[in-house]
Structure formats: structure tokens, C-alpha cells
Amino acid sequence: MQGFDDRWRDLPDYIIGITRDVWEGRQVASLHRYYADDIIFRMAAGIGHGNRDVIAATLATMAEFPDRELLAEDVIWSGTPADGMLSSHRLFCQATHTGPGLFGAATGKRVQFRAIADCHAKNGVIDDEWLTRDYGAICRQLGHHPRDVARMQIGMDGGKRPFTPDQDRVGLYTGRGNDHTAGAELADILKRIMDADISTIRKSYDRAARVCTPGGAEGRSYAASENFWIGLRAAFPSATFTIDHQIGRDDAGLGTRAAIRWSLHGTHEGWGTWGAPTGAQVYIMGFTHATFGPWGLREEFTLFDEVAIWKQIALHTG
Image 1 (spheres, rainbow, N blue to C red):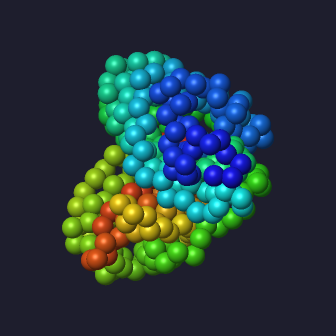
Image 2 (image 1 turned 90 degrees about the vertical axis):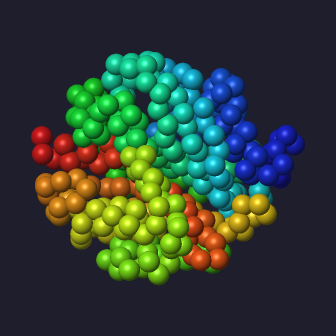
Image 3 (image 1 turned 30 degrees about the vertical axis):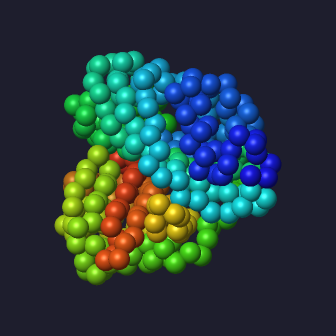
């Protein structure tokens, strides 16, 4: 791990270790060391610049969910320590809502949700990040609809716009991942689905595939994936779908996996997951992880922030 502390044996060890230090070890100040001073930090809710923004966001989440545990499910990565590495870190989180914040007054309820963070690391620090949390899952477990939480947040933040490409800044990482066949296969599957070739799922997935999608939804087999992707594409039938980053890997004990960061940008002009068409311009920053086996895609984990989508719709409709 050239340029990194000898404590870390490889990138997954580094990513999982610093996450544990910051959140469960309460070493929030270590972000001054682990994150670059000028890091660009992108979430569906907005964009931040500098590790002080990261620290502020971390403290705010800790105040709302002080006992949050972040359990690493996988780190799918590319690059080298010398050239820089991009990790796509999937986490299963559990916490108790004991403080006021983005989700309103404390409820005391337990929540479980996933998050995926794409981080660029070089010379011992993270200097670029893309992150999503399954806020839809949190909302539902607290007894709220994501649409209502979106409206509440508009009242709290004065109508601040969620993240869209026009707000983005060019960071230190401009790579596109690697050319591993698993990444290429997952990218091809997603492109075909977004081209309305829904039959791709039955051709490419294991019949017993596990499918995890936004809102904490989890199902098995073809229909679980078909229903999700049809509902998304039907709502935004002419939106532009883009593969922004792709990684494939084979690792002992973990098998063949892929991580794709993608975006969907266009008009809410169809009936689908978000109800009646509103004409709102919507940008979705999405993440999909997959594992592959002898009979096709065995696990799919797709995440995006439903609250940010509802917020864009609400800001358009008033």
C-alpha cells in the first residue's frame, strides 16, 4: 500500500478500517487526516467541498443516529496504490433514531438500510467521493413516505436543490474503472434493461437471484428485478441513462463481482413508481453491485435516494 500507513494491508482493509474508526470509534477528527482538505463529496441531497463539510455531515448523522453501526458487505475496487484506487464500498447499517434531524423529531425506532460509497484514495487520503444511502428504507421504517419527508426537508432547508450535474466539479479522479469482464457484463445488462429489453433479466439472471432495491425491498427471482426496473423506466421513459463508472473483480472467497455507478437524467413524463407524470426534470445518481455465479447474476444490490427524487418533483410542482 504505497503512500499509506503500514497499518493497512490493502484497499478494502483501509476503507473498512477508517469507516469503523470514524463512526464506531468516534474518531471524527481523523477525517482531517483521512480526507483531503479539498475533497469533493457528492450525495443525492447535494454537493460538499472540503473535509470540514464531510465532518459536519458526519456529526449531523451521528446526532440523529448515535448508535449507528456500519457493517461492510463488500468493497469492489480498481486501480493501484501508485496510480490511485477507486473503492465501491457497500454497507449494511443499523441504528436507532434517537435525535432530531433530516427525518424529523426522534422516534426511538430501529432502522436498517444499505449505503454505497465510491471513494478515490491515493497517498493515504480520500480526495473524491460519491455516496448514496437508502433514505427510502429509513423513511418507511420510521413510519413516513419518502414523498412526505422530501416536502418536510424542503421546509427545513429553504428549497435547496438536490445534486444535479450542473453543480458538479471536476475532482482529482477522472477514471472510469477497469475493463474486467464482470463490469462489462453488468454494464451491458443495465444498458439493455434501460433500452426496454426487459427480457434481458430472464436471460442473464440466475432464477434464484437475490434482488435488493431502494426502500429496503428484497425479493427473489426475475420478477423482483423486472418490477423494479420497469417502474423506474416507465416513470422516466425518455431520460438519458449513462454508465459513469464500472468495476469488475475476482477475489478469493468473494467470487466474481461488479460495481456500476450510473445516472438517469430527464423528465418525469410517465406513469411508474412516482405516480402521475409531473414534467419535473429529475437526476438520479444510482449504484448497482452484482455477484455472478455459474447460472448468471446471483445477487443484485441497486441503490439510490428516493427522497431526493421526490424532492425534485416537489420543487417542480410546488
